[in-house]
Length: 135
Image (cartoon, rainbow, N blue to C red; front, side, top):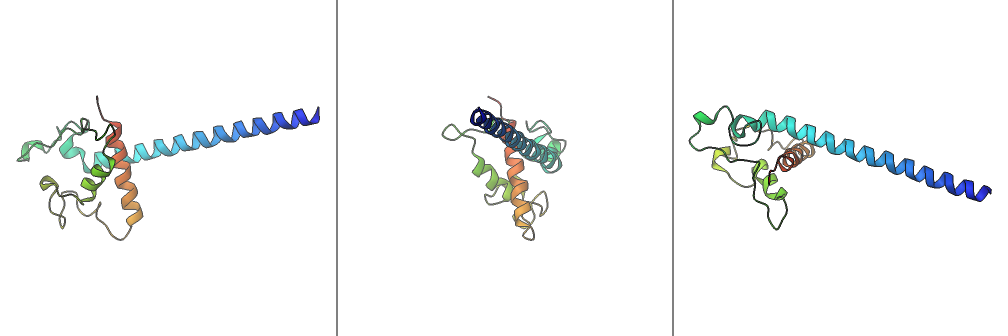
């Protein structure tokens, strides 16, 4: 009888721990999405619009309309995270984003003093853009 109770306690402990870590991972995903949305609104929405469709408040002053970020073509059935990350980081030149020395959003995504934070910020924005994709 004691062995049966011990087994039940171990199984219950495993389920509780599993649920705890599952909830923590969901909290992390939500935190990344919240961070990405906040950064997007701060640095991208003026051109691409709060909804990502390209209707930001500075559009009338632009020579070329910004693209709709809610309809980014998938590559091999997957969201092109690496390509989007490279655009944000300035690794791929986009004329509308400005020269690497003076991008439209300042040095925030090209800072060298805090590479980890920079990469996490770019990751968060990339994930947010992925989350607003429409079919």
